Image 1: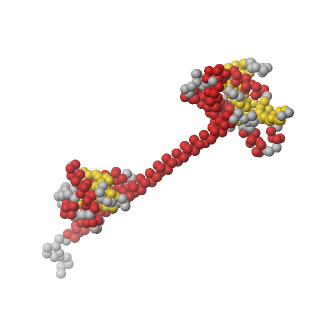
Image 2: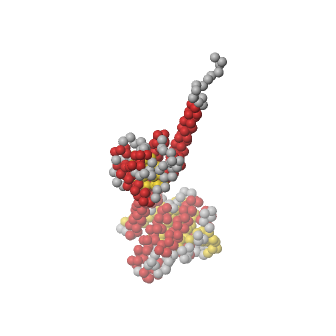
Image 3: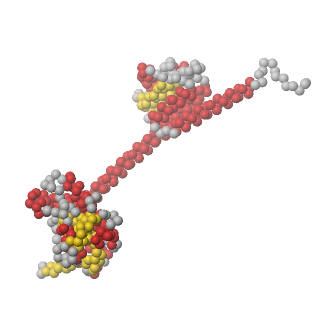
Length: 431
């Protein structure tokens, strides 16, 4: 022996290594293919897009020019989805029918593995070299069919195994898409029902509020108990809490301009309907801003704003006034019965006034009323009388508290009826 290893005659020393390397390369290729297609499939949630993407990527990885994929109901009598590349229209129609019939046969599901070239060509069409059936759920089944390879090589067993693995991933992706569609549909239904519920609730609340307001106006109650009084009695059932005392507040008067003339023009019944319509809107604006209606007349209201903070009740009064003007303009544009636009004039004053209960005695009984009185109240009423054309007027004390939010223009100092000194009046600028 000379120590040299001799290779037996006819043996290639590198043959085994090359064979293993080739097998490893093929394995790596299949794993990469599986990764790429799975990544593409699981990145989508649209059923049709998943099918189309799978069709394109399968064609590329298997090197074929023709490919078809279809789904049908489990009875196999109706095609649900059909996508193909490389087949002409007459053949597409033929593949639809043959594909469903093929899926209806027990042979298609005997092992649920890819059909051989001979079986696919016999059951589907000569141009389909490899086919694979799959089940999506209880309602859908499907089929993938590949045309011959461009290299004209036959499909090997490893090709069929790879296609089976890819189709299994396709089924998982399709089931995920169906679940996503179902969840999305349930979310859409829930959103619609929530919106309908919110709308219904809002309409119900608005209707209840307006019914309460309209009923109180229609009934023409002799004893109108403001919310302020109700709240005070709830906190302290004794009448002592209703005794008059001086406090800082904002008072608003509003008046429908030309009420008497309007009554003559359209009649008392129509005017009552208009007052109910406009005042219903006014009440919304007033209550939203924590106002309390103290007195009502045929064409006007007296409203108090009683927040403990001086700036807050002034702001609430002007916000309510601005909202009333805005809503009045909106109703005017929508109304078809008015001979001319209705103007609501408003006066607001803030400062010290007496607030509390007054009792009136008579032989027939007693009457209680809860209101504010004093010079401040008189000034608010008089500047409301000065307002014209739907303007909103206020005194300096109010304007200084709201100037950061609302722009006012000074009209100068004007004389007011039964007020000894002239009072500087400001007008809220139009938006």
